[in-house]
Structure formats: C-alpha cells, structure tokens
Image 1 (tube, rainbow, N blue to C red):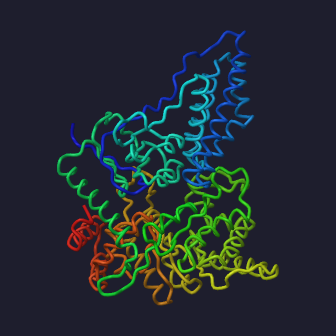
Image 2: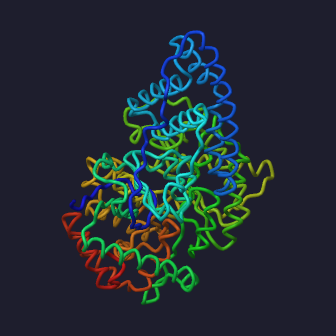
Image 3: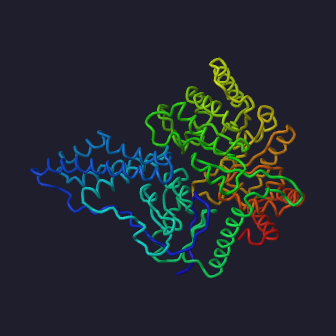
Length: 587
C-alpha cells in the first residue's frame, strides 16, 4: 500500500501519529421492519417508554458534559434533550407506526432518514451539518433504548491510543472521548463550526473534518497521521514523511512544554527589543484558563456566538453580561479582552427570532454586522451588556465583517445611543473602551485609510480575507488549491491595511489562522503587525519564533514576499527563511 494524502478542514491544531480506529457509522441494527396490526399499539407504547428513558439518559449525560467542559458546552446537550420533548417529532413517528404498521425501531429510522435527506438537499440551509448530527444522535439514542442495548463508550473499543476515523461523529461520541485513548480524529463530513469541532477543541484533540470520501482507503490498524495545523490526513506514511512528522511532533511537545513552564513569563520580544503582544482566541468563557495556561497577554478575539447554541429564544442582556463579566474578571485588569459583536448567519448560528429566509449564497448575504444592523434590539442588547461588563476589566469592542465606511459609522452611532441610555439610567460603564473593526473583506482593506479615522484598532481576519479575495470557499475541497494565505494578492491587501493603520496611529492585530502559524510570523512582523491573536495552544510556539527574529530581517522578508507572483513561491521562501532561523519550527 502506498502513502495516501487527504486534505480537509483543520478545526483543532496539533499533530498526532497512531493506528487507525475506523468507526462503523451505519447505526444500530434493526431486526424487525413490520409488525402485525394487533401489535401496533404495543409498538406505540414501546416508543413512548423509550422516549422517556432516552430523555432521562440525555439529561444525565448533559450534566456530566457540563461538569467536564463547562455549562456553555453542556448547553449543546441540554438542547439535545429537547428532541425527546418535541411532540411534533414524536407524533410523526407514531403516525408512521399506525399508518404503515412499522416497528418502533423502523419508524424512528425511517422518519429520521427523511429528515436527513431534506437537510442534505438544503445546501443553503444554515447549520445543516450541525442539525444532521443532532438528528443522528436522536435516532441512535432511541434505537439503543428500544433494542435494550448497552451504550458502550468508544474508549473501550481500543486498548492502546488510536486515531479515530469516521464518516461523521455525533457530539455524544466526541464528548465521551478519553484523550489518553483517542489521539486525534478525522471525518469525511462536517464543518468548521460543527459541534464535533467545538468539542474537539475543548478536548484539545487534533482534528480534521470535511475530508470527503477516504474510509475505503484505510483499514483499522493502519498507521495514520493527523496534521491538525494544515488539515492534512496521511494514510500509511512513507519512512521520510513519518520521520519528519515524528520530529515535528516531538518539537511541538518540547516547545509547548518548555514555554508553558519556563517561557510563560518571558516577553514575546524580538532580538532587537521590539515587543509583540500575543493573545488568545476563545469561543467559550471557560477557555480563559487555556489563555492563562499558555501565557496569553489577553484575549484578542472573543467569539460570542456560543450564546446562541441550540436556543429557542435569544439570550437576554444578563446572559450576555454574565458571559463577558466572567472572562474580564478571569483575565484581570491588565489584559485586554476584545469582544467581537455577533457574527451570526452564513454557516454560523442564527438568532432564534430572526425569521431569516434561506439564501442562495449566505456568505455573501445577510450575515454578521449586516444582520445586526437589521436587528437593532439584538445588536443593542449585546452592546449594553458589553459596556456594563466593561467595569470588570479591559474590554474592547470589535465589529466584524465591515465592508463600508457607512456600516462602521452606523455601528458607532448605535453604540453612542446605548451609552446615552446607560447614562440616563445611571448604569456605570467605562468610557475608555477601545473600538475596533475587523478587516476581512477586500473593500475594507481598500478603504482602510478612511476606516482608520473611526477606530482605535484593526484586526485582520485572514480566514475570510483570503476566501473573499480569492473567491474560494475555505470549506470547499474542490477549490482548496486556490485558498492560500500566502497569495500575493492577500499580502498586498494586508500591507495596505498595516500602512494605513500606522499612518493613523491605529493598532494592528491579526486574528485569523495566519497568526497561529510560525511560518507567517516573520512576514507579519515585517508588515508591521505587533499583535497576534491565536488558538492559545499555539502561543508558546509563536513566542519562541518571535524571540528568534529581528525586525530588520522581518522587513526584508516582507519586501521579498510582496514582489513575488504566486502563493507557492511565497510559501517556499517563508519555509526556507524559518528553517534557517529555527530548523525545527517548520517541516
């Protein structure tokens, strides 16, 4: 067997090497399809009893998950328990039993499969992949209960550490992983915002999703490599590849361990004394401990969409306030916390009461700041909560997906209105809260000199900036070769932004995947970036690279890259540069 490479969506960084455990995702065996008419009501009774039992089990599991990962992630499973209380859903299954004389098991599977078909055909339906996993979880739980089967933990299927490969993983399966047994995971389906991706990050497991069909090319026990940094799955690696990844894995462990212990309090400072601020990206309040553990100097991107996970009503102002207050207090008065206003819509969560119409292209539609400006009660509720929480730390407000100067002016106008309301109500807030905007669409980069007049800082969101500049969906494997942060067009836009920011005295931060890749550190510093915000686990490695660089050589790197014509040319040059400075920091 020769080495096979498969590329997918990197959702949790890190490298893992180990034998494959291939999961069978065909579900639970259904022994009986039809029943005699006289048994129909008995099947209805079996279903009703199973629903109660499965709901109880879901509640117990939800509490266990909340205790393990925190109440925010536990909320995902709390909502799953609601499936068993959905009378419309249960009644539809009962109707199938009565009309078709199906067994309870077959009626459950048949109805869920119909729902899954509709989800699969609704390519423009936001959150389709998450909903699909939820229904599969619901089906599996009911079938296990109806069959009287014991729910075996996946961890008991392997005696030694393994890498889990599957078509898809339900959130329940992922949540039960033991990191001492499961080294990493890779799936054929799934997206960057799926519940499985969220849980993989909470477990700190290297993970890749959305790879496409590959399970037919691998057998249980085959040696595989999961590169969660670049989204690469390597099946049956050849000797040179295996040796290279083993060296990278060892170096990453050494670097992380060393800088977590001895380097945590070292400044991220270049050899010639230039300070770089390294901050963490977080999704849930509980992740502040990871920021502190890995030496982050603040939170550079606090994604707030988790408040909308599986909710039937929008979160209250107090829900927002408590979530922001917790992070600000835990990070302390000297560490900034950049709170991004809601980036809802697109492939992300939706407001519960927005009544949004499915869009043919949601990435170019009503999402993020556009949605907020169309739903001012939702927007102002969050702004009030952020301002109220600002007295507990060093809060900053950042507006996402700004594409025009007018949008930014509207945001600031609504913020002033909220401040006036708080003043009238004599509710305290900090008047010195910094205001920033993300630069993640080309129009914002081109107008950076004008946007800079309205804000205190820019944060370059490289993930969206790359996909919008190159018109290449970062989650679409068929155009994966086009999506590259090294593309000269992207670099030229970033150079425009940093130049405009420096002229206006505006701070420049990078919070996309580029900021967590050692490869790009010399380039970003050379462009004038002095703030990086990345996954907390990447901070020790970035700090080590920063401390090995000088600003003068970084400026030279940036000049060279800006003259190049192709992404591959830039990437090759950056690899050679970093290999020369720190041989073990790049493959």
